[in-house]
Every structure is written in C-alpha cells, then in structure tokens.
Image 1 (cartoon, rainbow, N blue to C red):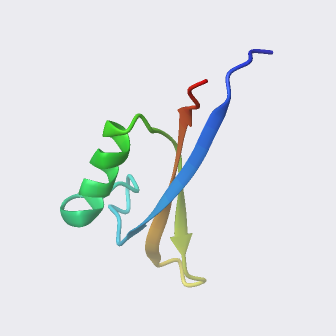
Image 2 (image 1 turned 180 degrees about the vertical axis):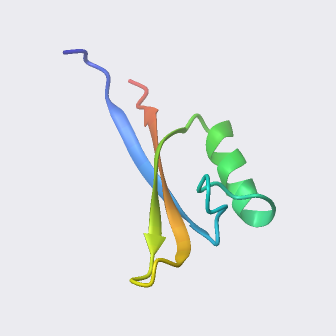
Amino acid sequence: MSGTKWEYGQIFLKSPDVFGGLPKTGLEMEKMNRAGGEGWEVVGIVPFTLPTGEVRGAFVLFKREVAG
C-alpha cells in the first residue's frame, strides 16, 4: 500500500447535461475549471434525481494529492 494521502471534495451542479453530468456553460463551468486549475481530479459524478426520474443536479466528486 502506498503512502499517498488524498484530499476529497465535491461541488453541486444545478441542471447539468443529462447525458454526461457536466456543465455546459456559465458559473458551473467556471467552478469545474477552477477545481482543475487547483489540482483537483474528477473521480465521479452522482446524479441528483427526483422520484419521478427528473435530473435536478449532480454532485461532482474530486480528489487531489495532499502535499507533504
């Protein structure tokens, strides 16, 4: 097992692209770009859906290596 330590984070995107979970434009895309610029890697996307099946958002999960 390696000694690598990871830090995890998430952002919530309202009304993401239904087929990819990623934002198309605007402030949400800026959040994704800023996270990438700070060294965060996307590790997963979890859709937030209503019982009717309507997608209302998505949680984007990130990780980055902890310096040390």
